[in-house]
Image (cartoon, rainbow, N blue to C red):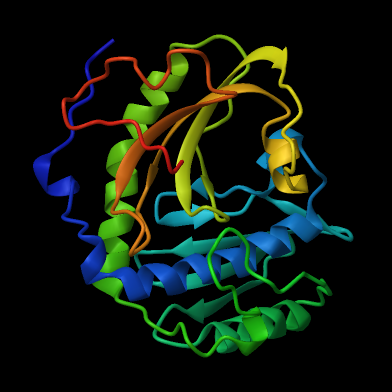
Length: 257
C-alpha cells in the first residue's frame, strides 16, 4: 500500500482567534441542520444516524426518508451554500453569508416547508456554554468564507490519515464522521464490552458511551477554553492512561476533557 502524502498547501493555517466568531456561528448553523436529521432518522447506536459525512464539497447529512421521498442537506464550503436535495429532483439552496442564527433557522425551516416537509425540533443548542434558542439568537452572525474554506480544507487533509488509521482495526468501529454537537471530527473503536453506568450522565452521553471506547479526532477549539487540537480519549479511562508516554512531545494529558 502506498504511503499517504499531503501537500503542504492543503494544511492551511487555522488560528482560532482569527475565526472564532465565524466558528461559533457555523457551529450553531450545523446544529440547526443536525437536529433536523435527528428528527427525521431512526436512532443508530451511539448517535451515528445524526452525524455529518464528507462530500467533495463539504459536509452532508445522511439521506433522510420523509414520507415517500428522500432528503439530503449539504453544507457546501466551496460555493458557500446550504443545499437541499430531494429524490424527486428538487434542489434548493440558502447562501452561507453573514446572518444571525435566528435568520438562518427561519430560512431553513421556510425552505423545508416549501419542499412540503414538516419537522419539529428542540431549538436549544447543545454542548455549548450559555446557549440561546435558535429563533432568538441574534448574537452570532459572522461568516468568513475564507476561514470556513480553510477549515474545510484542513478536514479534507486529515480525512485520509484518519481513514487509514481506521482500516487497521477489524472490530466494531465508527465511520469517520463529524459531530455537530461537539463540532469535531472523530473515529471511535469499541472492544465489545458493556461500559459501567456513568453516574449523572445525560441521555446523550448514556447512548454515546454505552460500551467501552477509545476515540480519536480533531476539534477546532473554542475560546477561551482551548485552541484547535487533535485528541484521543478512552471511556472508561483505563488505569495508567494519564501516565502513559505519548508522541509527539507537545502532546499532554488534559484533565479538563
